[in-house]
Structures are given as structure tokens and as C-alpha cells.
Length: 312
Ligand code: NAD
Image (cartoon, rainbow, N blue to C red):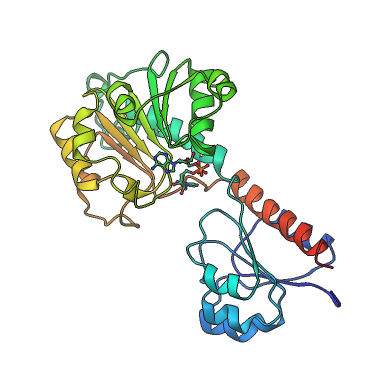
């Protein structure tokens, strides 16, 4: 490779990642969220483009990127990148799937406690001058059963915090069973999905959204949950049938829910979920921490440097 490697940073990434790229001798140009037209006109001079969930790296942009060798996503999902077009041109696509793991896992615990101790409900009432102490009888995590559906990076991290930090029992379901060592370390018992649904006090979802996981939590499964149980979803909105969940929460099939992701995002302002007191809602903030953003930036920067080093 001749000349200086040029990197287009097309979305905000952590300053430490930019420093790492500059220290590696790359020329880094920061142009946040250019339009497709703008991208098409400038991409020709760059070897690398770094994006987040935006901007879109379309087939046209990839075609215009005559020198392009790497498309990097400082985060997980690759929905905004035309992977087929990148493959056709032999362009490497890099992401940072492990960067948000701890942040999402901590949010799960936060949502669970917020629902079980009615924190958001109490806060809303305090602001209206209401002392709702009598309506805020809660439950502890300790000694309860956590049901983890999808035992990958995030599911295991939640299990680790719950078992080691909160003395919880872990039941999990996944299409792939974890090793005996992992099960022992996390005090986790492999079960069928319906066993998890029927026995857990807190169910937390950590599967990707696929045809096989769309509406995995449907009316039938919500009816099988304990009436005292709560559901936490930080995976993807489509994993839960929202209409069925609203019914379950209204009619008391389950005790509550904590949600970070929705079938429609942003959640429409008048959505029925916003009218329910036994739900805690956050706007898809699982990975929105200083640490996760830094890890995502650094991980892709390191992977870019490593990949291009081997190309020289
Ligand atoms: P991962 O790939 O490490 O784990 C996913 C697990 O789901 C794997 O163990 C896989 O075997 C299992 N799985 C796949 N299909 C299944 C099925 N049909 N039934 C049961 N298990 C199945 O992924 P991860 O990093 O743990 O991420 C989990 C989810 O969290 C994903 O949906 C991801 O999009 C989401 N996520 C959300 C945020 C947020 O901001 N809220 C941030 C990062 C990731």
C-alpha cells in the first residue's frame, strides 16, 4: 500500500479511537452524518469509512469508493451497510459486537429493580406531590429465579451479575447449550423455553431478531408466566408481541415489564404502553454509555489497524 491511509469518520466515535488511528499514521477526516449524495462525492479518496447506525453505506456509495478497503461499524448492527455490495467489491466489514455487553447487562438489572421496586412509578407520583408509599410494596431479587432467553454475550453477563451479585438462581434457554464449565460458573440450569417461561420470576430476553425469534414471547407464553413475574426486553422489539404484552400487563397475567426496545422506534407518543403504571420504558439506551462507546470505537480502530497491517 502506498501513501497515507485515509479514514473517513462519518459518525461520532470516541476521541481515543481517533487518536489511535492518527497514532497509527492514518489521515483521519471527521465528517459526521453526510448525506448519501455527499458521501458518494467524497468517498473516492478514502481507504476506510467508520459509521454507527448512520449514515447508510449503500451500494452506490460502495461503488463510488474506488479505494475503499474497510467499512467499520463502531457498534453491533450492520443494517445500514449493503453487505452484498461490500462482498462483491472485496471490502472488509468490521464491527464491535462485544462492546455494549456489560452496559446492556447493567441496564437489565436497572430495569428489573425499577419495575420490582416501582421506582419510576414512585418518582412520577412524587413529582405530583403524592406520597404513594402504600402502593409501593416491592420484591427483592435475592433468592428469585432469573430466566434468561438467549444465553450469548449479554445473557451470560446478566446471569453473572444476577447469580454472583444478587444470589439469584438462573434458568436459561438457548438453541445452543453452554458448556458444563460455564453452567457451573454461572450457576445456570439449561431448560426448555416453556420451563423458563413457567418458572422464572424475572424473564430477560437476549436473542437476535430472526424469523425464528419474531414474537417468541406471544400471548400463549405470556399467559404461562407466573402472575407475579416480570419481563425485561433489551434485545429487539420484534421478539415480543407488543399487543399481547399490553393485554398481559393490563389484565394482570404478569406483574410488570421493563422495556428498552420496541417494535416501532421511536415508540409513538400515545402508545398504550405509556399509559401503564407497571411498565418502565427507556428509549433504546442499552449501549449508550461512555464505556461502551469508547470500547466500540477502540475495538474497530484496532481491528482496522490490524487488518490493514496485513494488507501492506
Ligand atoms: P449473542 O449473539 O452473543 O447472543 C445471542 C444468543 O441468542 C446466542 O447464544 C444464540 O445462540 C441465541 N439464539 C439465537 N436464536 C435463538 C432462538 N431462536 N432461540 C433461543 N436462542 C437463540 O448476542 P448478544 O450480544 O448477547 O446480543 C443479544 C441481543 O441484544 C441482540 O438482539 C442484540 O441486537 C441486542 N442488543 C441490544 C442493545 C440495546 O441497546 N438494547 C445493544 C446491544 C445488543
